[in-house]
Amino acid sequence: MRPAPPQLLDISRLVKQGAELHGFFSIAELPRLRDALYDDSGQVDYRLEFSRHADGFEQITGQYHADVMVTCQRCMQPMAVELGTDIRLVVVAADTRAQQLPEDFEPLQQTTAAPDLVTLIEDEVLLALPFAPLHRAEDCKAVAAESAHTPDAESGAPRQQPFAELDKLLQSAKKSAGKD
Image (tube, rainbow, N blue to C red; front, side, top):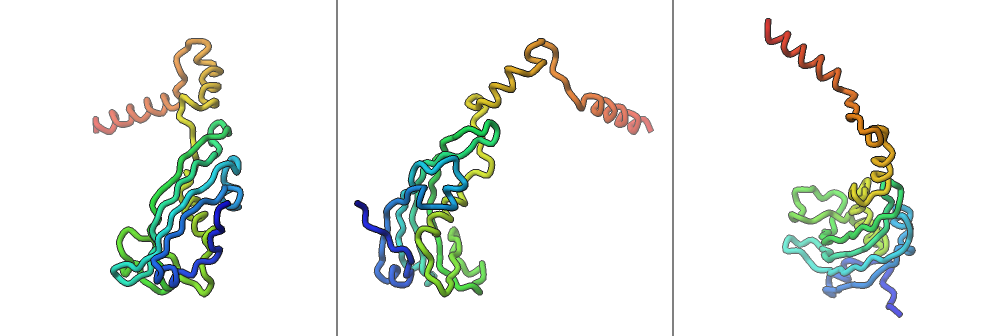
């Protein structure tokens, strides 16, 4: 049985200790992520290190990795996606200017309430989800079905080009303009 991670993060204490947290959450434990996916199978593995940046900011660095099932927006079938990236956050006060932040770090705004680990990890994964995931054309059932049922493919007739007439008009307009 895995040890329970802290729900609320006392970042200052974790930074002083040079703490490292690692573990996983099942997708079922992450309600906002679960709602954005095809199903709740899989898990998100994470590792976070708490330290002080050279500029004095408290920082959280680490990685996460998740294999999730999303919905292909073309065929509406499940599609496996591998997500994972580095986490690079600095804890900042609400009035900290962007110019003061270390390069390659994202701000984590400090509020009166301690951030919770579930939300922190879930936010990072949600930001990495593809906006409109699509199977590769050769793997997508919708593309295969569409190409098999198009009238042009069945008859062998040349493909219709709906803007061909517009192109002819533009070409003749260019020729007329060049004569003046």
